[in-house]
Image (tube, rainbow, N blue to C red; front, top):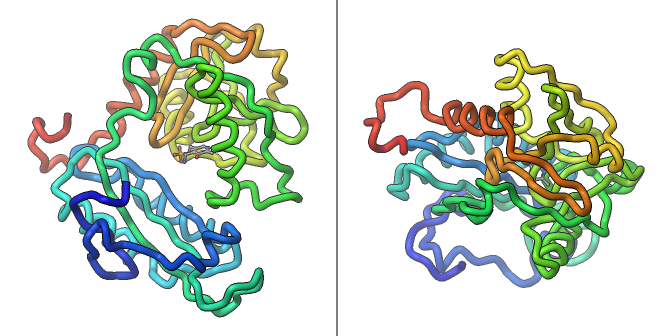
Length: 296
Ligand code: PMP
């Protein structure tokens, strides 16, 4: 992935893709002092860019560092890089991390570095499988207690258990894994939030120890706009046997139906289909100066 054409925004400069390197003694690499975002551009505009940038800055603060750019500078850098990339539908990845000046756990004076990369990333899950509903394994690892880790930051360190869980699920032939939280309640997958449908009502876990996704927020509002009741609440794993539909939400995953979680089965039903369509409609640029052809 590091050998490509294109540019990466690296601490304020545009650097050729393959030259955007960090030293092996980077604090972020050794100790996980790194935060990032994942965004999608549709039709040349980054969806909810300001909210993603605010979350990036907040994640840095949760890890005890201040990103040395303002929100507006970061927003503009992302818009400019997107324009320079020539892409209209793309994935945007800003990342901020502690640098390499000091090599101990303590790194109070290390510089905070920021980079942004943009590339094409059509579908997070296999498109055919996605329409039928993806199959999820149950993860072995659980989302940590907020007293064990800063569990609501989008911090690289929290993804160690996500990669382990996703790899284990893939080895078992599943697309992804559902993670419980430390109490044993349903939490989220390795890179997306989860919703269930029962009797026309949406149920989703309270986001008190995992990322309250921006897509989750959008989908809650879209559901409410259609008069669908949304309950954010504790969901016990056994309750999944009564749920009729299930889907995931995330910037990369968008709205992805789920057909199976461990022993539980779901249909790709009416509400899931409606919200998939509403989401795709919602992400299209509203200030449309773009020709329709570019918005596909
Ligand atoms: N949970 C995790 C662990 C994630 O990585 C993501 C993707 N950023 C989400 C939830 C969904 O967040 P969002 O909708 O803001 O992309």
